[in-house]
Image 1 (cartoon, one colour):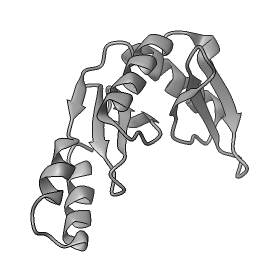
Image 2 (cartoon, rainbow, N blue to C red):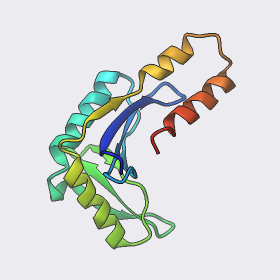
Image 3 (tube, rainbow, N blue to C red):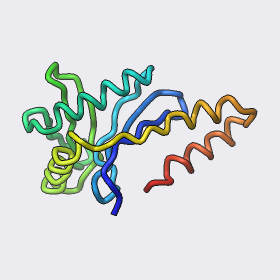
Image 4 (cartoon, helix red, strand yellow):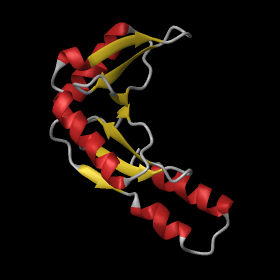
Amino acid sequence: MNNPKYTKYKDTARQNRFNLKAENGEKILHSEGYVSSSGCDRGITSVRTNSPIDDRYDRRKSTNGQYYFVLKASNGEIVGTSETYTTSVSRENGIDAVKRVGPSAPVDDISWFYKDMYTHTHTHNEYHICVCLFNNLDK
């Protein structure tokens, strides 16, 4: 069993992002892209603060019939979006998991990896393959 954690990383567009994984290692929440690392840190802090509060979860259904939720800050801004679920019960289990692990999960910051790869003389395709592999290491 994996430990719950936030993983902070940079995507291929060099945006700072995070996701939150549950005790079983499944991704249960992901962020928007942030320009700065400090913005991403503020997003994680907002999830920590707002995740225990049930009223901050907006339960939704996508156009293809899948269930998901968004977590909002006190100002109404979305700070995280869930994965999709096939049932509303599964969505509620996802919310319960975020409530349980969100406030105290540690942060695993792998955003340095992009900077390190980008400063070396690799082609973009080599870099993209490395990022995809690296982002999947802890699955």
